[in-house]
Image (tube, rainbow, N blue to C red; front, side):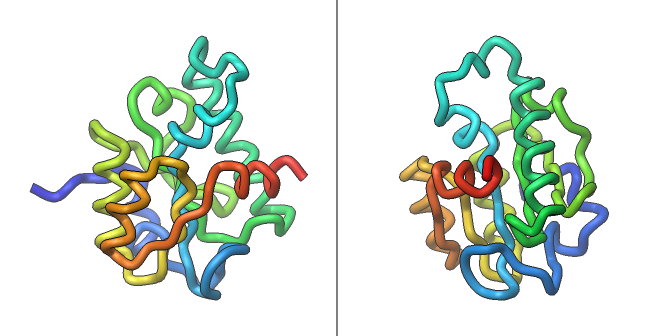
Length: 149
């Protein structure tokens, strides 16, 4: 059974666009493993996962709007973090709610995406899994350096 991703309805293929990220090919799609990126900093995010997710999405939208990141950007939320941002596209960022496991949703998304995928995650196992679909990966520090600039 294919993994269903909420938030991809607005964008054909969940992120297909002629724009690009700052990393990778001109037509690449930046996919953010929100749990891994948020979890890369011990700043108390675990006390309020929805607020941490909302803050990340807001920063991604601001960075996209300011040209620090190029659309399309897809951020995958799972568990309690889904309460922090509605699924859908706004400000150049598509928020996807994973039905259950965020990693499974990201692998499914990478497998369906026709454009090159650049994954933001430090999760070695996830990076290896999406690489089988031709995706490349960067770590959370790459993203933080762009959205906090």
